[in-house]
Image (cartoon, rainbow, N blue to C red; front, side, top):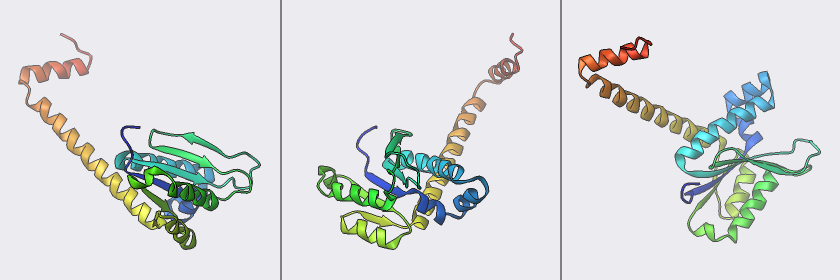
Length: 181
């Protein structure tokens, strides 16, 4: 990971899926996996842009499998709880461990969930709590900033070609069409 992330963001995955209208609709039409994949993609972009170490935590959801985690990007990992463990308890345990971690002096710990009791518990451990709606707003705003930046960069790169000599522009156009001189 490039540098130390400014924050660690713990996301209650299925809670967020249930709270974001587009993810809830996707879950209804295409299932949990599609909604989970969509959330993971959104969090990957958000985490990279913001420089957050993000953990998307999903309940074992009745599966008899051990806890596991998977690195998606240098900024995002997906954590699946073990059988019988909830995402809430997994996140609370992570918050409790963070209390005794030296990183607490240099990094923020943020918990994203719509469960206000769970959010208050995380705050009790010294974390910041944000609602699913606040996270959705921030993810959307970050996506818009990224698109604006990409459009600006695209305009700049187009401007470079228009500054070229017309003969060079014509030659490049022929090359793009496969009509080499």
